[in-house]
Image (spheres, rainbow, N blue to C red):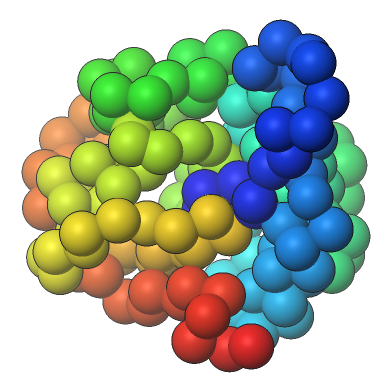
Length: 155
């Protein structure tokens, strides 16, 4: 999932930018919409950036995901997709269902690398669910895009 719409109003470092009210509302809307449509993750990973972590915690609260499933990882503060791709390949094979929160252009790129449906741009608070047949994260190449939810579809 890409983080919700962030604010540029405050003079803060990029990692500290907060969500706008619209970003919060879109994250809640997407979380409510997908609740029950996809399986609860075994683990949740987020970029350390404020906007991604806030989007992540909104999703976790709506779904009732325990806090101990969350890990913040600097490799997800990536904009090209290379670090995120490597992160996914390095996931523990004991995990069957994971959810990651981060940034564009990385998440559009990852959706297109691993999913079977092309996405021009993953919008803020956009979620893509991809299913893989492989048993090892290091072996995944192409999966099946099961669900694409963009906030404008459900407003």
